[in-house]
Length: 273
Image 1 (tube, helix red, strand yellow):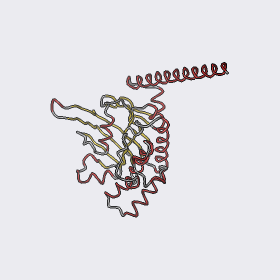
Image 2 (cartoon, one colour):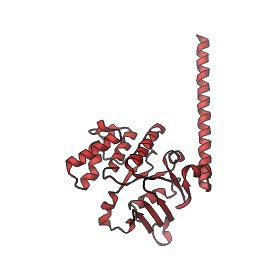
Image 3 (tube, one colour):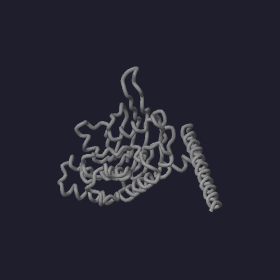
């Protein structure tokens, strides 16, 4: 379980301080897929970076399985992070390492024996559907394949939590659906708690059990995903849902016009024949 209590995060000091997060309170249950939804600049990435101490909170607590990690000293951070995997929008793979050696990297840092870390990496590559890609390099992979490698690497230390920071933002819709299916399978089969950071209503709707809506560094709405989207209470979520409907309508209209144009061209060609 992840408990966040009265979390504040500010950048800068004194009169020039910018408060990115204000009094964040959340409880994320073990085994849950929890979404943190917000527009650009809302504070969602600052929040997720505080959750594994890539950013130190200004004040407040982050309690994981009963332990307040916000009090952990720098020299103990590595141990804490072995229980928290993380994937990013840009994959963050080592270009000079093979797929296999990207996945084994966290285990190398822990001084795991070579045979054991390669066995673990091969198991994970099989899990993410890249069993035959172990000796390739990231530059030889598609974006979706690179994110699968990143997922395997994040699981190397057998964490109980995985933070996913805009993990599908750089991917097309088909690949996004495939990655979300993989993440859901990992959640179910490995009982890994997933925290999904996203600006996308579609992503949140497709994978998250519950969602917290963040705006201006504050949680403005929290609840079951279906209920939240069916009856939004905050202005920002209402706006995002309205924008999504408008965009879907535009896309549908564009597709209809394109199909009509194709049909007209086909009819004209048939008449010529």
